[in-house]
Image 1 (cartoon, one colour):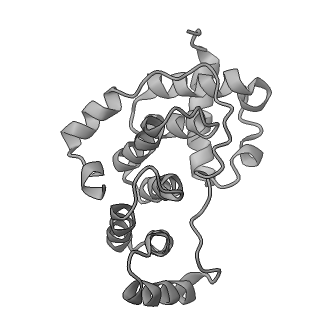
Image 2: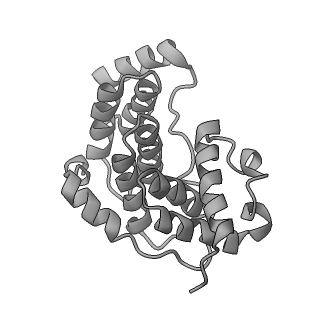
Length: 205
């Protein structure tokens, strides 16, 4: 699974170009995706040590590997985090209950590590996995595409957010409430997308 998702730069660019155009509306909460993978409640180094011990003795431990991967990448140990996410995803497929949340978290960790292309590929994998029009997709893919310099596509995706919930997304005033898990820098980037949308709103369809 992990190997299939590790694509070359050229293939990644081709995949990015093949992202379908947005649907009209995105109302699905997709709650099983947009959540952290939590097995142990401890935090920081204590959690990392506990999860490491579990991984040493437990076969599989896909969820534990995913939680430890997130903690590692959050701590700046990006290579270790990637290895652990690869371990987690190697034991999962799209039919597993935690697969979507693992991929979603991996995407955010990649994005925040500065690897915007790989983050996009993970989000695109979720988009393509099944026919879900999830509410997280328009703002997240708008952010991702804008960060890749694909600004016209980013505006198209932002427009889908506005079509779905116009009173929420037609300005950036509510971003802090709507996107509490995003960093200020991420919300600022999305505000650039919003401004580009406001300057020239694309027509639908």
